[in-house]
Amino acid sequence: MKINFRIENIDPLGQGVDKSDGSITFIKKTLPGETGDALVFSEKKGVRFAKLSDIATPSPERIAAECEHYSSCNGCDYQHTTYEKELEYKKAALARHLFKFGTPVINTHGAKRRFSYRNRIQLHYDKKKRLLGMMDEKNNILPVPKCKIIDPSVAFELRRIYENNTWLNLVKNQPPQGHIEIYAKDQDKPGHNVQISVNKPYADGGFTQVNFEMNEVLRNWIQKKAVEVIPPKAVVYDLFGGNGNISRKFMNTTLVVDKYRKIPDALNHQKFFSIDLYEKNAVKALINLGKEGHPRPNWLVIDPPRSGLKNLEEFLTEFKPDGFIYIACEPTSFARDTVGALNNYELETAELFDLFPSTKGFETVGIFTRRK
Ligand SMILES: C[S@@+](CC[C@H](N)C(=O)[O-])C[C@H]1O[C@@H](n2cnc3c(N)ncnc32)[C@H](O)[C@@H]1O
Image 1 (cartoon, rainbow, N blue to C red):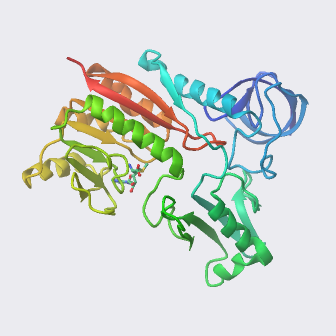
Image 2: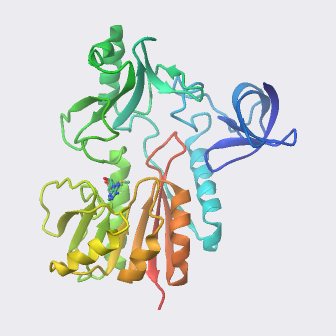
């Protein structure tokens, strides 16, 4: 069904919101004030989702996207406007998520590079249709050989496997449909290698942030703040710590806890433990570390996957830390998990780190200190 739209505002997922005919329609890649036509591709409980087909009145904020796949690809959301505007929309989205936090000041840390940063890309394939690419809203596969946001070394491999459909060799003994992931390992080292995995879980070689440069900015900022707020003798538990990325530069004794224990080069202040933090006995398992002679924490760093840590309260009730740093790639989880802590903790600062330029994603960091 074709509709005429007039965009009122941008929602926290970067979609334009149209209410011109009484129902709500979300249309990606539009901007406030724009009018035009869109095709509805799904409708649930009176809420419609439509794909932009034509713009009658473009916004003065609109620019031509740099990537030739942009109009059809679901990977990016903001290339149709400037990076400054993208950051403004992201900040507004975070502010809306934090409305229960007493409108804190949000500091935005934008990226130097809007393109050529992602160290991994996951693509779907269909052998019968001889298609490899990103999935659209109707589960069609869109080839993206010229994706602009990936690291040049990943882009080189991507072009190579598209050439003459070379990727078909990679999936010769694989199911008819599946996925291929290309990722650059050790981006910080010269001559870093690029690996390809087929039908393995996302980030199979161990979680690493996708934006090496901005990860540096993020952890340097956290490290600087940690020096200010965490006393040198305090013990830190870095929960969902992965390879210890966030607390790597801390001065404090740190217990890094993750389900998947991948120990990088040994660092004196970090000890690594494997615990499933989503298990109902997770807090008990952490208490047991104390019974094994490890110190209890005075501060927590919590950097969970997208789904967050719904029972954060349990961890805070048990350990009563002097403060905690919550890092979230999903602002909804950030708000849901930490709002309950406001009775005992103050949100000192809320920061937006743009680790995912051109897309709707960003990282939220909150530093919470115990009220006196
Ligand atoms: C957003 S990443 C953060 C990793 C790390 N802090 C970093 O900056 O690289 C989330 C981490 O949660 C871990 N994880 C996922 N499920 C888990 C679980 N059930 N229990 C503990 N850790 C888990 C993943 O292995 C991953 O390292």
